[in-house]
Length: 242
Image (tube, rainbow, N blue to C red; front, side, top):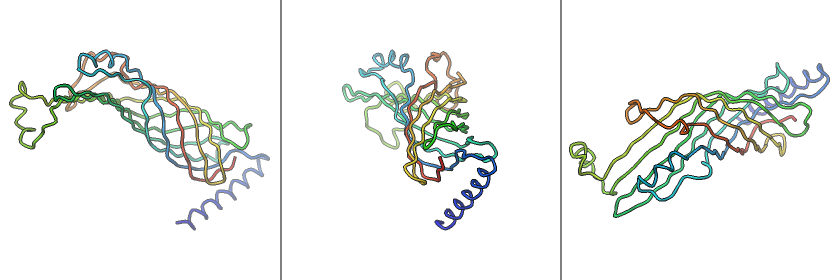
């Protein structure tokens, strides 16, 4: 595998050098993949209004830490243009226990997208790229109430005696398309290792919600959506010629 990767790097380097000699200057080049982390900042206001009545004293605030991965390759047909893909997911929760009954609300954001970026050619030694991600995502809100006493048979019997059980859960989902303008800075520490910092804003397109087994959920406040500003960092392995 190492020999194959080395051969690939040598081949792309020679091809790039030939093209660069023809155009008379060095454009950005590289291919990479790695691990990314992001802090996403959604709007929790309408959920926080419901938490006291649900029996939870704390509120959601700050960001959601998401983990994921991404990768890209520069297109040699168009100088400084790169394409790639990415995916991520993260969850936050709020909970409390009163009189032996536990209550919890979980808020989850996840998604994946195709990425396209243009790297500013006049900046040397680092890659400053502006672009957009186009893909899909999901916002999931889960509600739990239970007395923490579960058995196999009870999980079936509860459906015949809902009025007497403490164990209730709900799962609400909003699947949407995303358009995400981004700006990223990739700093290569050597030819094969780089670190990234960046930010962007995810726009979610779709207000339709479902609950449980894909049943329609109505009257969800419009401010509960996948829109979110985020800050991103990452570690990349690949080949970089900036």
